[in-house]
Image (cartoon, rainbow, N blue to C red; front, side, top):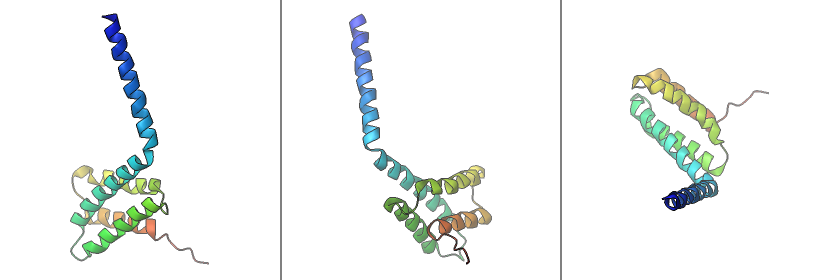
Length: 119
């Protein structure tokens, strides 16, 4: 019986080490997947809550620009974290109101069009 537990422990240890190696070697792919899922989640909810006066395609285009900017490295993924945290707090009541939607849209726009400083 002791041999069984020893073998089982070794197998579990090997699986844990293999998992760590897999995650470490694929960390960029895993992070890109997580960022894509976060962006698509926020985009879907924001587009659904956008008032009719705003073109939904322009909102989708903004999110695409941010996603592409994160993929090519021009936008740091951690900058989207603030938007995602705001989104999480905004949907705690199960809906987005127009003020929350406009703030998210402005934050997304600021990611790929930084505010220009006047000189």
